[in-house]
Amino acid sequence: MKYVKNNANIISPISWNDIPCGVDYRQALEKMLKVWWPKLFGFHLLKIGALSADLDTGDCSISHQISVGLEGKDLQVMADPYHLPFANKSADSCLLAHTLSYSGDPHRLLSEVERVLIDDGWIIMTTFNPVSMLGLGKLCPILFRRQPFRSRMYTQMQLLYWLGMLNFEVLHCSYLKSLPWKLPREEFISHYFPIIGCLSIIIARKRTFPIDLMPLKSNPLARLQRMVNAV
Image 1 (cartoon, rainbow, N blue to C red):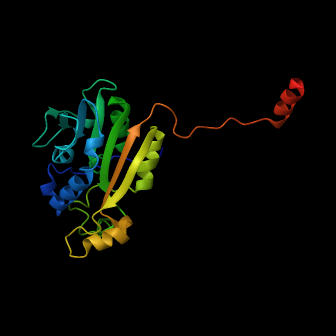
Image 2: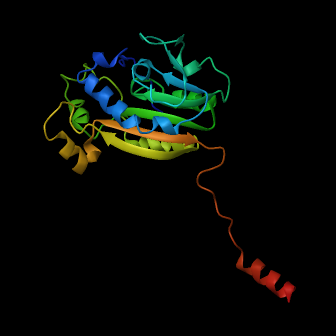
Image 3: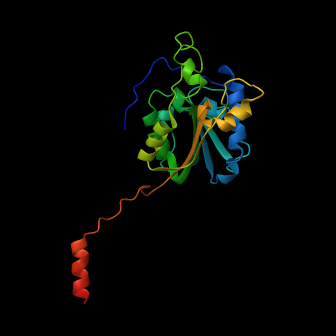
């Protein structure tokens, strides 16, 4: 697994209101996740990070929801996401709304989430898409010090690789918000050019067996010998 070094310039916002067009991003995520919340089941949902806590998850079938983070207005547990104060396999689902985008060590964070998730537990991740208008803005030196360009942006292939290394089965991945701002033809662009969406979302489940099983190699000579012995 390729290691991502820590970056001291990453400053995490405590609300979607701290990000330009953040309210539109939040509404787009809430609208998309509204379809998935009834499919989740269990007893405990962890909302890791201030942006996760700021999302409306009232439609989730899991009633006990805990918001965890170091700073934010709707947090129930003040704790470091790298050291979650929960036992192994104690959470049924984890929501990471742009938590990786503002994490200095995403591998460590994902490993900690994998630790607290039960077998077949759910993980929902959202990030900014580098192959988008936001990704182009990150190349501009003037915008580099502003939000959301101060965040890390990962391609879906990179995130899928990390999840595969931790033995997660990806159930859904898509893009949202083709443009950061609202335009009359935004839905048309999102429908025909989804890959340029500003937001990336991945939904996966933790599995206890390898997703890619290695088939046993068959020895033709040994199989022929067994046939001769049978005769």
